[in-house]
Image (cartoon, rainbow, N blue to C red):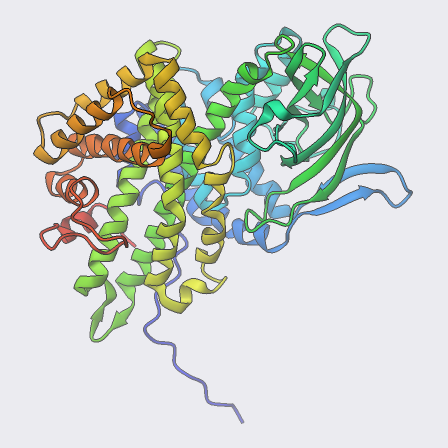
Length: 542
């Protein structure tokens, strides 16, 4: 006898295969506008790959977490991390398609924008592997400061992924990590206690100390900060010493993190570990700051990517799921929620790509360099802060299904707080904005110049711009209100971008809800006059 079974009805089709480039018109427009058009062919290829095969690998890489192996079976110290094979496949795809190297391998105007679009799509497939890809990309300008590290810089940008734990002389491509955080200091890196004692060779040191958070510990080398005789300094610390012996780099444990499960994060101890100094003694922070600026940019881009994927998942479900006689998306209240999320996602993507264009142009344009310095912190603060609430609202669109691991939304929800924590929490970003305004007047001028590009296009926007100008020139102590100020600056930059580049009804809905206050404290509270249908048309099929 065969047992009767139930019929499966009113369920959406699988989300995959998707295409993270073809289906995202906002991303396509932003990349073209900010100078990334020459790489559209490669972006199209990677969008299809990330939305299908890489997304499937992402589930496997997160299901089987990395495992620490301190010793081999014979008792030798090895300090290795074992990953699911899917992790290495994701890393290989990212490296070979330019996620870690495009900006440096093809350094023409717009290459940073194209590379940001690559990592935007890769992040949607699997966020954990973004960490070593980001750090490898960001380490290159620091490595290039040291003539003796040319091989490291060249192999960091090579489109070759080699996960073997061997000296870099045997590898065509390498990955780079970073170790700044110590348990007693956190963001206050000048409180670091790891010591760097000079060795016999020129620029060679032995590092002794403990790092509280070092992500991607299977990288081939790490940029670290330590206290040399002349003060806090920057070093390259490799897993293998130049003489071919293992460095005295000891993994103590892997962090048991809320999310980011595919990627390993560790505590590590150095026992007179060999390292090569980069830059002068006592100039560690200025030396490594270019890497930090680029990793912070990727935090902004990554959070915008999480918003985009959460929105796409919610739209897909609501377009195919029926309730009370019609599709969920055809219910006015649900449409308001989705349109509100769509506005937030579009503004986040626009901001991320605009800041990336400023970073791209910084070596050629002092005004863009000044804008990049302040806008990176503004964007990282606001977009990363918005991601957790955004992803939770997208989960709610799916109901209970959004709380089940078979959908990607629980993983996204665990991932969403991370970018606001890494590379400087919210207060650090806000203080950086204030510091830039006080010490580098050109940053404030560049910011106001950017905002002025939309002046005269909308009365709501013009009022906000006038108030911001007044606040920035008031001479008041801005620290107690720094979060509110940076939030307003972020919304103003997003409003400027929407006014200049989005259809008028979309821009008007953003300004009314974000700048004029015609909005509640939750998503789904757009004003009744908002063109909800027009907003939803812009966010692609599902």
